[in-house]
Length: 141
Ligand SMILES: [Zn+2]
Ligand SMILES: [Zn+2]
Ligand SMILES: [Zn+2]
Image (cartoon, rainbow, N blue to C red; front, side, top):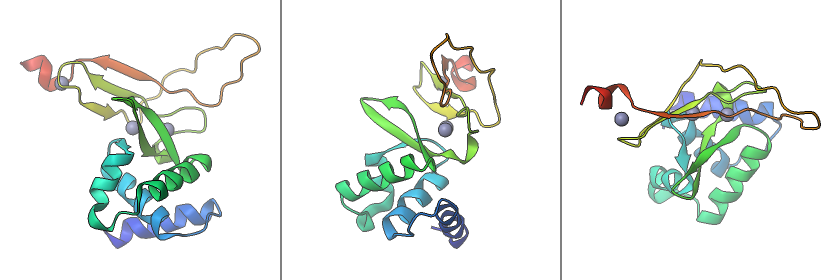
């Protein structure tokens, strides 16, 4: 884990006026370095032997989601995948593209879709878009 990422994570927690805990720094640093959404188990795996216990990781994730530092990206194999919210806007998460053949999912950073117009009576918090299709590699096969 690089000092630069850790410093960035500490700054983010400070901005949200969250207490700096070892678990928060560890979990958010892993997500920042991942480059793709991760499940709770994948986060634990990447932290290795120094990983906090399951309950702590879960509570840490929930506190990061509550302050919007982390977003729940989507469900895969009945598990939520989490990612840092720094590539999302207030109204919209960056879209995700899942290849139906190799099942790989990529983050489409910088890609924005028009916000859908909701029927009366509904209020939008955030729009999340997930696209299915064939990735560049699988199209060549
Ligand atoms: Zn997001
Ligand atoms: Zn593919
Ligand atoms: Zn993403």
